[in-house]
Amino acid sequence: MKLLTCLSLLFCTFVGASSQSTCGYHYSLDWQLWQSNANYSVSTARMPNNKSIALQAKIILPTKINHFYQFLHHEESVALWLARAEDVEITQVAKNQSMITTYFSGGFFISPRVMQATSTVTTHTERNIVIKVENKPTPITLPESSVLMTLHFGCWHIKQLSPTALEVTYQFSASANGNIPTWIANKVAKKSLWKSLEKLQQHFTG
Image 1: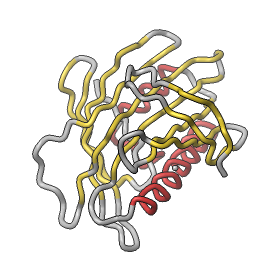
Image 2: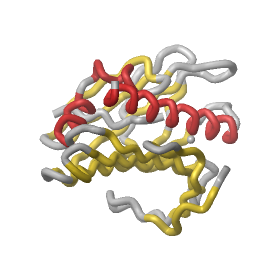
Image 3: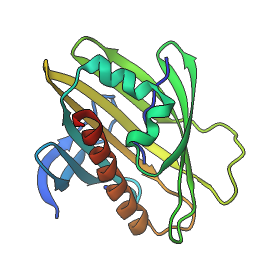
Image 4: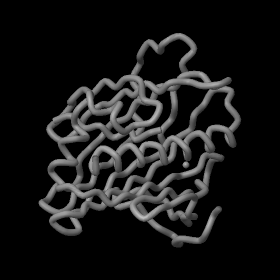
């Protein structure tokens, strides 16, 4: 089973206080709304021990939970929704666990990035799927000028609200590393996440 979980790779109105991830991470975060529309939103929160921000994406899609789950499994679907992703390699390491390496394009004064993570399904029922995403870098040869990112935490929560409505929530925090200033990395991450939600909405609504 292949699991694609990088969404990887976000004004501010108070949204909620002290929210803990369903994946069991011990973070208490105050989410601030960054941008939203009728179908999806991006919120941010300050991480307690580093300068990176945590991001939360929420979207309602007109699809079934198993359809969306299968959609995340396919490497070839990455370009359909994940902003700035050029390539992805997915290797199954256990029944409910996969290793994912995602290659992100660079930009003006920004080197290409690579992220490696382990994705583990912790809950899978007819109405709920929870996927924990952890930083598990293994020695690889990076493409020229690329920088290896650090994932601090990640968690998918996929919930079937009704036969025609699926709620997808993804929380994560990552450091871009390299020489890019933190404020630029955070700005790019927010815009890329919003673009990913836009692509998801377009794909599932036509």
